Length: 247
Picture 1 (cartoon, rainbow, N blue to C red):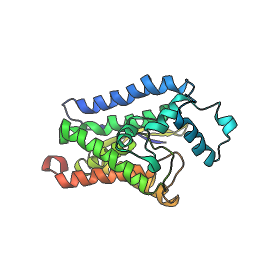
Picture 2: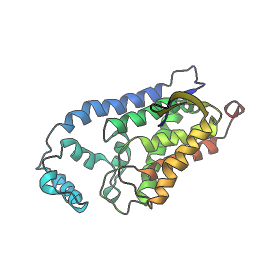
Picture 3: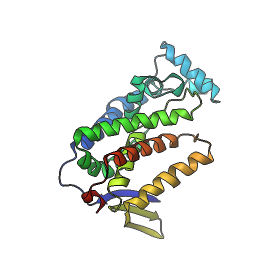
Picture 4: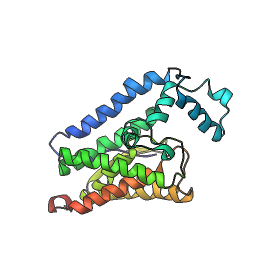
């Protein structure tokens, strides 16, 4: 296993926007997602039948599915971004919904590691604007290859990929602390240049599976990751690199 767990150096200033984004994402999951995951859906909601129809078209057995659907599934169907029925509202709301604990933890780990340096470079308002714009760009890029799908896309990873794109341009020589876990042969934390980690993230983790699966990979929005990363690269290149950043 190859897992980033930190980076160095880090700015002395507190990255308040990053911490707020972490709090909002975690808060939405704990206060909304978790309770609704254990709650039955409102079967009188017109969207309920649309949801069942979409699931049936994807090969699910409706008799079995009806006993498994939660109120959170319906909320995700309403506020996640469905390419066939997208809206300005869901372009924004989908960025703060997560499918489960692992989805949330993975995204928040990357935001916590890479967000503070980028926020320090952009300033709070510029950072927030870049985060949201990259998330929206990621969702739209994903939708180009989704073929009018009714399956909702959700998660902060597109926006966070925008942060990673900025990081690659501005802090390529920073060191990323990576956990190497190959039990019982190897368990260690090593330092790897940020440019290596982020290029591997873009090419191996996302572009390669995106191309191999024709833009569609079950459960993973590789297109959104790529779109967000490219948006972050564009922002960073447009602003430019200072001497301090390139050192």
